[in-house]
Image 1 (spheres, rainbow, N blue to C red):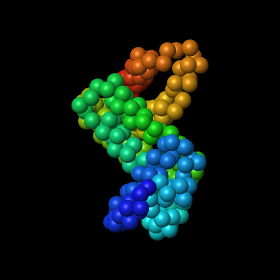
Image 2 (image 1 turned 180 degrees about the horizontal axis):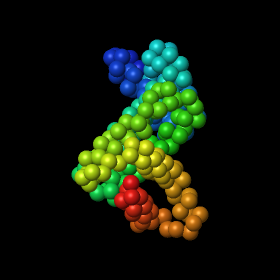
Image 3 (image 1 turned 90 degrees about the vertical axis):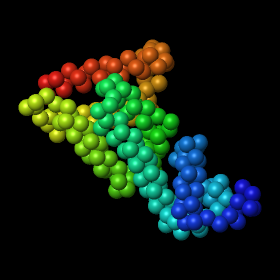
Image 4 (image 1 turned 45 degrees about the vertical axis):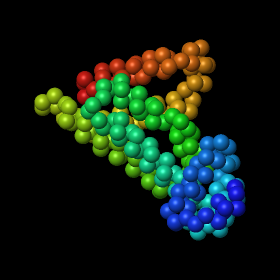
Amino acid sequence: MHASAKRARRTPEEARRLILETAQQLIARAGPEGLRLQEIAAAAGISHPLILHHFGSREGLVRALTQQAVAELRDKLIAAMGSTEYSLEQQLDQVFDAFRDGLAQRLAWLATIDPAGEQAGAATIMHDIADSLHARRVATAPSGVVPERADTESLVHLIAAAAFGDAIFGPRLRRSAGLPLTSDTEHRFRAWLAALIREHSAHH
């Protein structure tokens, strides 16, 4: 970083955003080992004490990063699973894509650094998504049919677990099964999952 960058005057919000963005980039590049405050400070062109001023500790920074990742995922999943504008196949595509671009890995790495990270807000994400999806299921159910809330929660868990696992291990699993690593292979699995969900929903 140039000295002029180090002397740049930033608002507290700008400094906080810079620290989070830099930490996110280092984690994406080096995994959990990239979350060293001294390295983050050097990469951002700020002082180490400034990070402590904004986040209190390394753990505080990890929780802020977790909150950021969870909020990003929550917004993507609610948009995908709560909308009535998309077919089930399109919704699944959006859910699976929501975990891509390193977001699933980032959440997994942050969880290993801070196993109690659900206290930062992650514990409520599935509840919020289930609220959105259940409202959609109730609105689109045939007359006289009321979907069970517990069934919606199980569907959310199944879809999220499948999408999360696919983002991290999908290519390895397909390779070990001798399947081609193509978009067609991915879409066949998503189409199969959509058919499974439709068959289940027809009886619930």
